[in-house]
Every structure is written in C-alpha cells, then in structure tokens.
Amino acid sequence: MALAWNPIDLGLVDAVVSLARSPWDREALDQAWQQTGWTFPKDGSLAKLILDDEEWPIVPVGEWSVGVITNDQTARVRGFSVGFALLYEPDDIWAPEPDPDLIDFPQYIPSDVWQIDHTADRARFRGVWEDGHRTVAERLGPPNAIDEGWDDDSGWQHAIWRLGPRLLIVAQGDDITTYSLYDEASLQVIDYPVDMPLPTGWDLHSLLMGSDQG
Image (cartoon, rainbow, N blue to C red):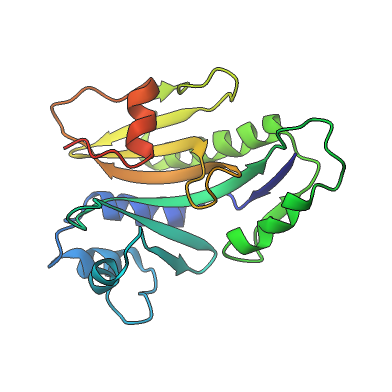
C-alpha cells in the first residue's frame, strides 16, 4: 500500500463553500471562480475551457487540482471536485515490493507539497479522511449525514452537508482520473435537488461518478 495526501485547510473549505453558494451558469461562472481566489486557466476563462474541453476539465490551483464536473451532453457545470488523498492498494497482496505502479504517484499529484508514504495502510487513509471531515465541520458544523458507501470491503466513508441546491461532500471512493488505479479522498460540491432526500449507498456512488440527478 501507499498514500499520497495534502490535508484540507480552511482556505480550501472557504473556496469550495463560495462555489457552492454561487451560480454556475455560463455567464456567471467566471465570476464565481474569481470569488474563490483561485487562478484562472491559461486562457483566462473557465467557461471557455469547458466549452473547448471534451472531457471534465482539471484546473491547477497551486497545491490542488480542481476537477470540473460537467454534463456530457450540454457541458453544463454540475459540480467541482478537489482531491486531497490517493491510496494505492495492489490487487495481489503477494506482489513484489516496491510495486512499479507506485511510481505513478508524482504524475497524479499537483504539487510537491503533497506527502507520500509508501508504507501507509487503509487505516491511515481513513485518518486523512477524518481530518478533512473535521476541518469542514469547523466551518459548517456537523454533517447532515455520514454514509458508509456501497462497498463493505473498502471501508469508504462520506460526510454530506446540504447547502441549498448543492451538496458538499467529503468523500472516499474511486479515482476517476486514474481509472480507479487509486482510491481517492476528495472535497466535492455537486448540484442536487432540494426536494430529494440525501443520497446514500449506490445512489451516492452514482452521483460521485457523474450521474446527473436533475
């Protein structure tokens, strides 16, 4: 096993909460991004980047990378995701060490301020998630729900806050960027109808993997 991580701080929480409370339509998107204090993409417009990019854009913002979650058909923004930990666990427990896949860490982390521990286990990964959950709770209070996810073997956890028509989630799950080579802990804000109950289990999994809930 191995872990790469960069702990959530209150500045990151404030930026994501700012996004959660801003409009995401194309005309307002750049202003919403500016209010976070994050740097813009190279061409100076997040809205233009989304129109030009065929996949979910990833925008570097210093020691973080922000994934922009879009609807594939309309390019409508429906969320943002900031990863803060990656766990590698080889499928074969008898695999020789060091596992060659571990060398992939540097190309998937956005800054050299991230810490890497080639001996960390899933319990340490859980601890990083718990630290992130506590940091968000400093700003927003206790979560509206804690969900254990959909995979009993993984031990994934999810803390969910409802912010009007958005959900803010401290999540553990598959890392889409690396085609699930790693498990990822992330801070996400996602569109979600105010009249629907909080998602749990496979419904939550579908939401985090890109399913449009309205």
